[in-house]
Image (cartoon, rainbow, N blue to C red; front, top):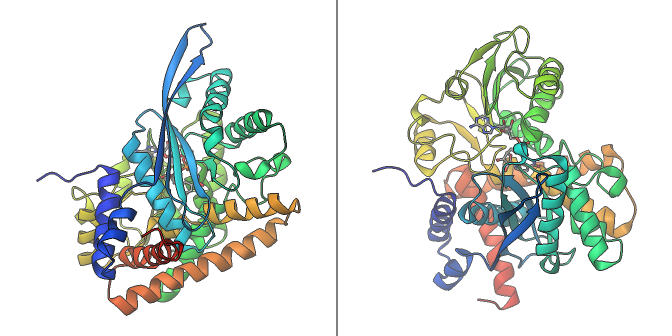
Length: 416
Ligand code: NAD
C-alpha cells in the first residue's frame, strides 16, 4: 500500500494517536481534528503585462482557544488547502508546546514568487491583506512570513492593513523589518531555537557536539541560519547542505560565509568552492551525527527511512517525516526532535515581537536570545519528561503536552 502523503491526513493521524493515549473525550477529539475556521479567497492581480491574473489563497484559523491564531503565510506553486490546514494544526500544537498564549493558524497563496516581479508581488501581497484584513488583528489572528514570503512582503501587508484601518497597528503581523516594529533576533530565531534543542538533546545522549558532523537540507531563511549557528555556536562540522537545485558536500566541512556568498551571487549552493555536488537523497542518507531537514514536507518517508544514518534528526522544517518513517526511526533508535518543538523558536520570537509592539518598547538582541533560550529549553524538557513518563516517542510526547494544554483550555471555556 502506498503511504498517504496528504499533510492534513498525517496531522490528523498524529492527533488520533495522541487522543488514544490521552483517552481524550471523543467530542473533544472530534473538535480538535478539524479547523475552527477557514477562508478561501480569489485575488485578482494586475500583472506587469497589463493582464489580470487571479490567484487562489487561503487562511485557516485552526484553533484559537489559547489566544489569537498565529501562523505564517506561504507563497508556493503547490499550495493546497490541506497543506494549510495541516500547518495550521501544527501551529496550534507548536504555540501550546512552547507555552505562548496564542492559537494556531496558517495562510497560503498558490503562486510562484520566483516568477513574479517585485511590483506583481507587492500587488499580490496587498491583495491578500485586503482579502484577509477583516479576519486578522492583534486580538484575532497574527500572520508572519513562511516559505516564499519575507520581511518585505510583511511590510507591504502591514502597510495595507494600516491604510485600511487608518491607524498604526504593528502587532498585526510579525517578522517585520526592525524599522516597522520587528523584533531584534527574529530572522535567525527559528534556527536559533533549533540549536537550543540540539544542544539539550546532545546533553541527554552524551554526544560531544564539537566537531560532530551535520547535514542540512534547504538553504532558505531557516537552513542558512542553521548552517551559520550550527558552525558558530555549537561547533558542528556541517559537511553537506542543499537547496531545491541540488546538494553539496565537503568532508572537511562547509564554511557558512563561503556558501552564503555563493548563494548571494548565484541563488544556488551548487558551485561553492571546495565542495563536490551530490544529490539531495545522498545528503539525507549520509552517515552524519545530526541531520537537519529545513526545506519542505515529506522528505523522510517509508521509501528512504531505512537508509537514514543520522543519530539525531532535528526537524526545523514542518512535517518532513511521515508516520511510516517515524516507525522505522523508532526501530533504528534515531533521536527525533519533532518539528513543532524544534522549530518553535520562530513563533516564540514572533510572540516576543507582539509583546514589544503592544508596549511600544523594544528589547536588545541579547535579551531576545536569553528569553528564547529559556522558552526552548523549558519546552524541550517538558517533552522529554513526557516521553520518559509515558514511554512514547518524542513526537508523541510533544503531542501529548500540546494537546493536553489546548484541550484543557477548550474545556475551561466550556466549548466542549
Ligand atoms: P525558504 O523558502 O526561505 O527556504 C526553503 C529552502 O528549501 C530553499 O533553500 C529551497 O531551495 C529549499 N528546497 C525546496 N525544496 C527542496 C527540496 N526538494 N530539496 C532540497 N531543498 C529544497 O523557507 P524557510 O522559511 O527557510 O522554511 C523552511 C522550512 O522551515 C519550512 O518547512 C517551513 O515551514 C519551516 N519553518 C519556517 C519558519 C520560519 O521562521 N521561516 C518557522 C518554522 C518552520
